[in-house]
Image 1 (cartoon, rainbow, N blue to C red):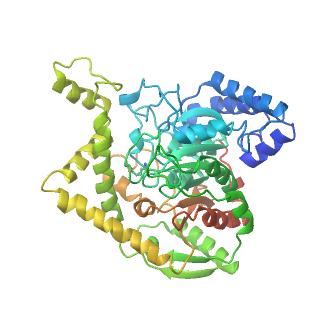
Image 2 (image 1 turned 180 degrees about the vertical axis):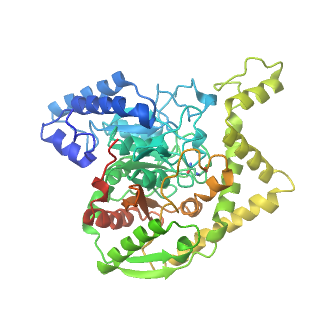
Length: 488
Ligand code: GLN
């Protein structure tokens, strides 16, 4: 395989396919070979059905030969986090609970990809049921960082970020409940986009915390994630939280929407705990926008210090309810030595769930229990509203907010997973976007002195994806960070 094929962007691959210089079968085969060459090290994939992928690629090549190309994703391989349903493929959520489960239907996002002719190339590793920030909570394996194999890829969509970073797919899908797209994107030096809550249907996404979950794309460029977002966004009668609103033309918006923008710098993101090198990278990005004539405003999000606590109450409460369905009776892991029905529930859940998932179920059950509901859950909901109002107030003066995605670069595997609180605190910069329901993107903004990627987070107004993509794209075009790749 040509060495440079696996790091090409979706737009570059599209151009090669259109020019007849590459077939989808050649591309898919080359990426399967790449996966086989690097995934023993990276561990991004839970599974990959090669025959199915090649068959989809053949169909794409036939369409192209017949002059009926379906669109920009036709014939392009895409990997899916193992929490998004694809009919007939495994859907494990990286949990023993669903180890042998095969999805009976497609998620709506999957249906959109199929209609667009994408080649579904693999199921990507994650923290069990999307709970975690390092992929170390996968029941199967830890996905490591292609830039440094001793470090984590981030999480929970670590496989989706690492597969793109390692050159095994040009684009992938993940899910983001508290940062699970943006943080691994930042750790792995790729672009990751969390849309506004309601922009993309969650039908067929295994639920973690339903009021926070959102599906979104990873890619090597802002334009590539815009292309995937365009394909999967839109109202879906099967998800009542998806909004009935037209999806703008994102590619067009990227071209037409130009600086100067008004950009906010929330001071709460630059305090204690922020790594000095990360801070310096973000500052230089802010300076760059200022040099382009953007107005830079310091803004404040006064309830930000409560965000981690609020998130871990609401997310665990919703998780405890959502995960009640895994009872060992119907389609999940079923204990072999249960003595009666009650024992079956206990043993199946005890054997099927990992430690972190159990911790969350216990926490969530506690905050919802009578006597504690008002003190924890109800108060958390009220503070959640205050957090959203903080953002809306900031957006009265600015178009978007510039911040670090994570307080630090990727950490060493094993460094934080014995200390849940340290792991929870690592989400500090990403979770408030989910609490507020707003969109956010992480784009590469350089490497630190150890050669590890730093991510710039840009958060936008509700349904302001088009502006956000334009702002991110301007920075990307003026820097070559997105074309830096791990040597592996
Ligand atoms: N790290 C956060 C958590 O563990 C966010 C996970 C996510 O976005 N799925 O809940």
